[in-house]
Amino acid sequence: KLTSFGNKLWIVKPMGQWGGTGIQLMSVDELKKINTKSIIQEYIEHPFLYENGHKFDIRIHVLVTTFPNGDMCVYLQWGGLIRISSRPYDPNSKDPMVFLTNNSIHKKYARCPEDILQDLFNVKGLNYEKVLSDIQNSVQKLFRNTEQVLNPKGYTSSFQLFGLDFILDGKQKPYLLEVNSTPFVDYIKDGGKWSKKIKSKMLRDMWIIVFKNRLGESVNNTKKKYKFVKIL
Image (cartoon, rainbow, N blue to C red; front, side):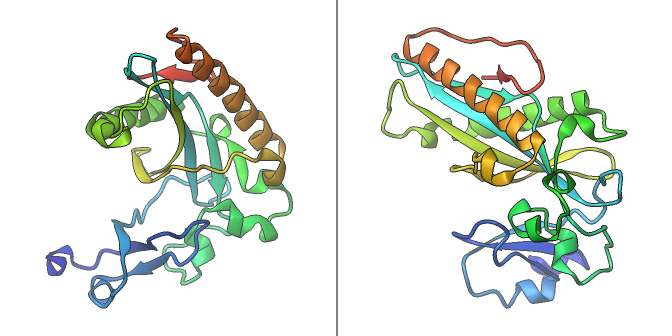
């Protein structure tokens, strides 16, 4: 029951939207008035912040493939792109730009792409090995529990790339925000060196894995920056 959640804030995302469109922060009383299909999540009020005091989220790419015999494999990119709010975080602010991290809505406010798109490994004070290991555990649980619905028609020699967004709380614990089945991979439109570096390496690695899996060959990379690591 919503009445049991006290004064917590909730983030509401309308179904079928992208790029931060229509996202709102709401109280319990406001949630009761929603009459459209939406995804509702508890808002992380005390996130781990980027070095300049700005909120950020982490885009992690996950590749799912099937072998000619139908066996499924899941690969996690070891590292990712962080997307930073263009305005300093203030939990008492009413400005949605403080809370949202979608780079598509912050582009016009940033001096350069590096202000809002950075490498996860550049975040000061972050125990990224622990964070990535926790993210790996979350991704493993997610795809173990959805394996049957991911490929209901039993396609073989197939693949799909997902973009998973995570946010960290003040103790660097990752929380899954959403799963994108058609992640934006155009690093030219993104601009900036980090998007190009991370996404270009991801795409090159993805095609190597896809073609090898199609031939029935498994790929087991070690945990190196930006490489896909087999986790299932």
